[in-house]
Image (spheres, rainbow, N blue to C red):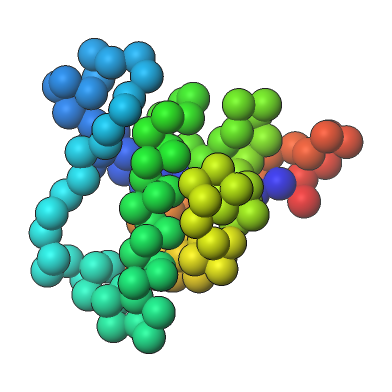
Length: 122
């Protein structure tokens, strides 16, 4: 099973205040619009959907344990469908975002493989 993690979570999305809070109800996000990843995303025909998926993923990841991972309370990784159900967004946004954010031009997400219910990685 693929577990998605926000790359550089601790450095980019935590601050002195957020580190003191057990359950975040907000997440600090960079507000620069001149980085290569942002420029790449905004050049896509479906940029708004990709960016909406990204913002929703950041919000979900800020409430996951450990923070910065896209993992459900039961320990299984989030999927595009589960993120859509949780946020009321559309699965297509998350599918597009997961693909774009893993692109080497962006690289805002990283993955690891974890064992599934049967003990095997998928």
